[in-house]
Length: 113
Image (tube, rainbow, N blue to C red; front, side, top):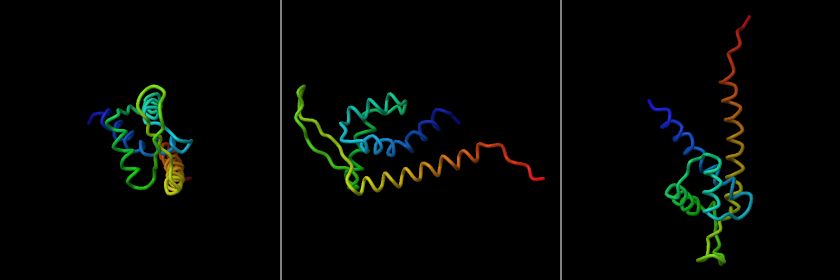
């Protein structure tokens, strides 16, 4: 079993959450998201990001607006819908629960007296 494969799967599992967190701070351009995810070592490529954005849009969690750019064609900026904000809040709760659970599991077991 390769460690790298497991690491990739772990990142994929939380990528949607991370994208929603980024957009949850305010409207976001895909290229900026990609840059932030790469800087956070989520190791994302455009080929991964755009299908996820489309899926989240189709699920009515995201919306977008086109804005003119000073350096090229118009850009698509994403925002969360109300359903997206609610979904993100539920994911945040799930993340906290999972972090606590993993923390418990990582502790050495207590021996009973």
